[in-house]
Every structure is written in structure tokens, then in C-alpha cells.
Length: 547
Image (cartoon, rainbow, N blue to C red; front, side, top):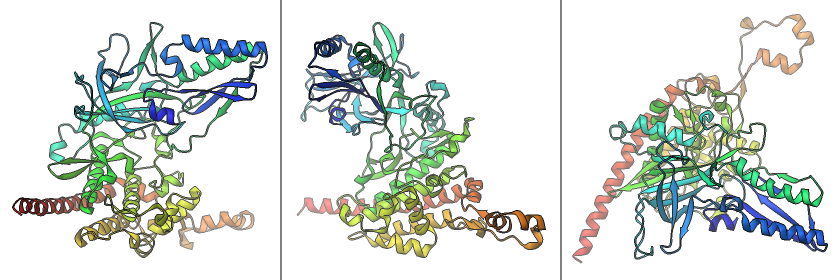
């Protein structure tokens, strides 16, 4: 894990295990590890095999030993150089590849398996002096480099982040000012390719696993065995669309250059800032759905940034790895489980056959608001983990999936339970009363219009599945049915089971408009509170000058 944190250009990792006289070589890809059969270095054959392995490694190109040749550390300038895909998203022969430079890493790859997402703050201006604290690089873009789950054919990938961002750029660039929203603007992006032996190679899972099997198969062949110890690893820390294509999970290295640069959600300095940022994020979300037909599907704290301008905090929704184009034919993707614990909607967690809609993302935002408000929405005024795990909300991320579902069903079932289980534990010490009331009101309104919307029939209120009463005159049972059917079957005919999210999904457009109207109202109020606070702080600062 530390290798990936320290070596930003590491594509995959090699390892050697030694147990007495037995040695194995191991290859760690993004979703599985492969090891060779053992080499007994107490024997001449085993020693020869191990030495040949080391010699072969020494003759490998950088990409074959796990390095990304499109990223290079410039020792003389103390910064990194990274290649950028062309505006058409390619890095092959004839492509207009540009280079960017960075020294600041905002996000590191922290796990052995998974996406290995890295984020860098970069500039396209090559430094002329050694980069240091006194001569820093001035970043203009954020670079996201990740191994997202993909389809082998990029044109078939309904969850391609580059395509989503390009569509958002085309759909919103002319409307951003009028809508007063901030969204990530892609400058370039695409799948990474590099040259090996004079040929262009796409950086994907096939190439990574191919390098592992090349060495381990070679070692096994020389050892006299054709068997591999292939350990398929469950990537439990990543929830998303797994395009398997009749083999291991397929991933491709995607690199995206975008702006503006933001700060993490945890950097909010007041409740008014927090409310502004989360409402901004959902205002963006609505624009993505209405104007671009892009459904985000992963509302989480990591995917909302704070963008500051002239003392005002605004919000921006990022990371479209799980997003889907609603105009694509593969609408079965809308039934897949995606998102981040503990923010996933009940419908999503339940793996229900009810289609996912933007309302699942609104519910995820409600979960995020509750989680952050309970933890403490202001930077520097947050609960310690030891205190947080004693509160009811801990069950949103602890235990089995069924435990999480039950906890959310109970918390959101009624305004009274919501108040007693969740809102009463909001951490508001030292916060201004008006701002605290604003945050609580926002949470109550979202819960009300998601789970007890006045436009839904009473049968579809609440969070639990329940039986719907059908009048006897409308549902007559034959003698044969009464004699042959099982009790559960009879009950389902007399009192059909109702999924509370079914009618909600059918009316998602109308309910989304209602929620957006509330988000706009709360956003305007929070913006006014920010501006008032800035005036007060500005007057205090002026007063201090003359003291």
C-alpha cells in the first residue's frame, strides 16, 4: 500500500515471498494477485531460475516492471511531468500530447486493490527554477488519474467519466451563468496509452495481467508446472458497476484534466457555508439530469468540493465514475447497486427491482447532511470517532447490509423517529441559532418530500414494504384458490405487498422539481447568511486596523 502512496507512477506491483529455501514471485494487479509456483533456491535448478528472473527484470522496459512511462519525476526541478491526452481523448500515434507539471498531490492511492485514484494539482507551464516552498507551482487544473471499471471498447461504456464530462460541458457551458452553478469543466481526458517496443499500448487490465502472467507462466514452465496460484480478490471497498466481459474485472487507466480547483467538503467554516455547498451540489445535479441526461449515482462527501470566490463558499459535484447517460440503451444499469456507504439510498441498498432515479441521489444527499450534521458540519468542531460510534447513526455504516437498511427505514419512517434518532444528535454547539435552524429545516423538508410526499398515495408513504388492502368486491377468490394456494400466496392476493419506492420512482420528475425548488430557497438563504457574516467580519477587521 505504501508503494502506491509514495510512487505516483506505479501501475502495478511486484513482490517476492521467501519462506526458508522456498521463493515465489507475486504480481499484484488491481483486482487480483497472481503468484508463481515455488522456486527452491537450495537446489541448482531453483537458484538458476531465480537468477534468470532477476536478470529478465533488469532488461524489462519501465512499463513491464509496473512504472507508468507517461509520468516522470524531474529530479532537477523537483516536480513531476505528466502527459495529457489530446482534446480528442487519445495518446496514440499522431496525437497532440501535451505535458503538465505538478508537485502537490491531493489524493493518493491508499489500497492494494481497486481504482487507485490519484489527484494532482498541475499547471501546463514548465518551471524554470527548482520547485520549493518559496518557488511553488501555481496550479490551474486538477488531474484525476484512476483505474475505473470499464468496458474493453470505450464506445460501449455507458459509465465513461470522460464522455459524461464532455456532455456536461456541451450542455451547460452556455447556461452556467444563468443558472448560477459551478460544475467541473473538462479540458482534456481519455484513456492512457504509452509506447513499448515501438508500438502504442493502451494502459488497461489486459496489459497489467498480461505482464504478471508472462513472468509467472515463465517461472512455472521452467519449474515444470503449468499451474498458477490465482487468488481472485473481492474489492469490497468499491461499490460500482463491474463489467466482467467473461473474465476478471476489466479496468482502463483514465486521465482527466479539469477545473476549477476546490477544497474538500470538510473544509466548511460555518453551517451557512455547509448548507450553501450541499444545495449547490444538488442544483448542479439537477442541471446534469435535466439538461444533459446524466445521472450521478454516487453522492458522497468525497464527491463534493468547496470552491471559494471573494469570501463566499460554493459547491461543486465531481466524480462521474458511477454516472450513467440516461439516453443510452443500457437502462438495466439503473438497477445496479452503486454509491458510497453510508450514503446509499434504501432502494439502492435493498437491490430492489425499482429503477434508480435522481430521487435516490436526493436521498443520498439527505444521508450525507445527517451524517455531517451529526459529526459536526464545521471544520474544527467535530465529534471524535469514539463519541460518534455510540450514536444511532453509526448503524448506517456498521454491520450487515440488512442492518443498514433497517436503521435507515426506522430513522426516516416518520418525522418523530427522524427527530429522535437523528436530528436530536446534530452537533450545533457554538453555531448561530439561525444557521442551525436552517440546517435542521433542510433535513426535515428533504425527508418529508422523499418519504411522505403529498403527491403520493398513502400506500406509498414511509419506508417499509407493507400490504395494501383490496376491497373484497374488487378481489374475489375462487374455491380452488382457497383450497390449493399457500397462505403467503393468498395473502398476496388479498393484501398485495407494496414497495414504498415504486410510485416515487414513477413520479421522480415531479418530486425532483419540488426538491430543487426547496434547494434553491435554502441556497439563497444560506448565501445571504454568508454575505452578512462577511460584512460583519470585514467591519471587525477594519476596526482592528485602528486599535
